[in-house]
Length: 234
Length: 234
Image (cartoon, rainbow over all chains, first blue to last red; front, side):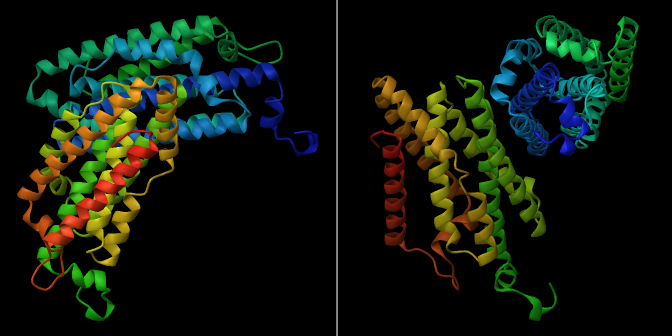
């Protein structure tokens, strides 16, 4: 750390304590999101109509857990305590999951697909403003492991069997979006360092209001596409 | 498979369809046990008193899931369908877990430690009668990943804080043992191929009644030791 010649651009950027704090905050948020998603998938696996479906959901849960562990390792490599970094996000994430607890198997699948997709899009947008090493860690931790195909197949199959399912799940998708925005707002209001990553600082470019507007447009468009791929109106 | 010269002793043993069926049965039972343990740990993680405890339980759940996936891969390599192999055990294992659902965090920890330990002992005893390849797969899938230290530390800590906890958890441990024996009996009565692994066949050595008696003595002794290491009377 004390030999400037050996420092990468990422290591240099992370020497700024304000930036480093914001990065740890962001990694903490993503990590708590992953462990929450893990718990939720494991919980929803209990509602699986068949053992093969249960195994598939358990596998998805395992992928989230793997991401969680890599994020924790990375936080430790930055000298941060992962538990302390996650704590500030417990209330908002738990509130989101409590308010969107699946009442059946299909709702759980839609949440896994639509909720994780939304989170991944959002963090990927933020990652664009970060140093290369942090960006790589984040993007890899959001990688979908091909389970989308499984969810799309199961949801479309259920709609083909009973068309009324589509209306119910479309409402569910809208509710997920609404709850996610509510909690994101709450986190943004609480965590100055984190929002500064988006809005920038004295010596760091960020987004102005128009750019944040375009970001939300992109998030909404991707959400609509995911709903459509499930056969649902957004 | 058709070149005898290249066949290992394990491959030869697995050419016997009765033996192979029994092995797949056993692997199915262990695999369903692992995915059930995964679900249970993930469920119990929700009751964790602190985020660090939750992360620890999630990690234990991840280890079970990894074992589950390796067992499924191995069953597929034997030409068996893992889902079909697990199906016969769903009712008994689900009944066990339903009847021993943890009502709090400490009960969950005791179940993870005592229940998994008991299952591991039992399957290791059976594995001694199997071909070398199958034995290796089973023993590796039962390997404890150092989380015992965590459970012992937390349970002993809770007893140190409030001595009454010990009485309640001792009862819980006895109930686990009772329920496990009930369900094991049920499985044994149902699955002839599986029990034949223990009792042997025309050309395969097995256990006589006295040996089965000694097996139960060993299982009980190990159970008592585990309870004692938690600071509990068996």
